[in-house]
Image (cartoon, rainbow, N blue to C red; front, side, top):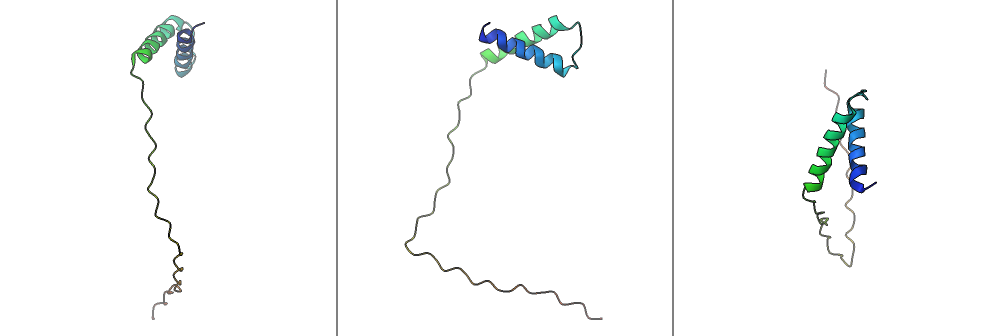
Length: 80
């Protein structure tokens, strides 16, 4: 079995499943699958894109000191 025949068989099975596995529709499913496989074979192949890398920050000799954290202000209850 050729690669094309296997692909047609896969398409026909997917179509059959997507339609709820009806009986008596085999020839229609095979025709649809054959057309899909032909279209797939004629379609241009997509070329993978290069992965973009983020520029890295230059490495410094001395690390920066961590900023001191300020305590969070708490909300005052409303005055009655």
